[in-house]
Length: 427
Ligand code: GLV
Ligand code: MN
Ligand code: MN
Image (cartoon, rainbow, N blue to C red; front, side, top):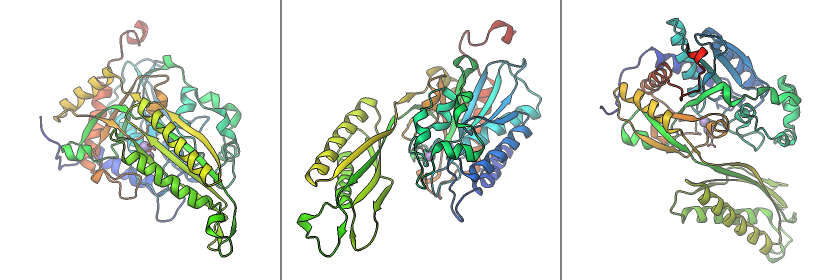
């Protein structure tokens, strides 16, 4: 086995790099990549990806929630599929690779099969999920939740920062909020779900390896908090008489950081969004909204941490005479990757001449939802400096190429579990 310092790039990596740049240019902000769910830029990106899918020999459509879906038939039309996917929405001021790498690489693999006229005993489907990041409507994994039939209809009434409900945003996008169920797929239609994704951390780089196998995707809890106090004059209200919602929030943020820092288990907590009202230099803040994102290596650990942190926030609010509203906006259990898929990925990595290395995913992925209808496997591709959710996010083209070659090998040598393909299909 060799360590992974590939210096050459080949055509798959170069094509992937070109498309990453093309997709990365579709943004709602000048000079920054921001492409959030149901925006007009997401629609533009969808059309671009649908075109790439058709070019690669797939039939392609936009589904009822905005996912882009391509299908490459197997030797016999209508066979169950090996589903490949990732997401094509982004965070704000994002990197270009988080999500699109998996979608573009999957399409590149199908295009390669198509060029060779190769059909397999099963179909291949590629899905670009429309909302994995959950930037716009607080809830996340909306695209894959619709595919698994576990979409929570109450999210349709949530509103974005501009007051637009998800229901209205779907209509503006050209979709029917009353027909989201049409995106759902049945367990029997899928042989497995495989996702290739940028690692978003520094582990593979430290191992000097271009690719790795994911063992499990860590669970996460997201909360939306609102503290309400009393707005007032910054010059006249004595400090002891204030009910300052922003000072209370600052204390909560400090408590969350302190709690996570002193936990040795790998617990991580982030307050990534905060909005203070009325928002003027000379006015005591009367109301503050903020979000909390908590993740831990085990579900038990995460749940205990959530309960402890909630208790601390409640105590802070009570002591400061602030009214607290706290809602869980997203909760996902840890999703283990299937051993039989890890084995097939390991064979492909070995066949490409690299050491097999396993690592957990601290980031969330659509596999967390897809596990409800299919076994899940994930391939990570090394990124530079472990940087992600940041414009400096970067993957070397040689590594993108290695990832594509590994995925292609997995596809071509894919063996479903016993009994997944009926005899007349495998015939
Ligand atoms: C997705 O990128 C997440 O882990 O928040
Ligand atoms: Mn991602
Ligand atoms: Mn992300």
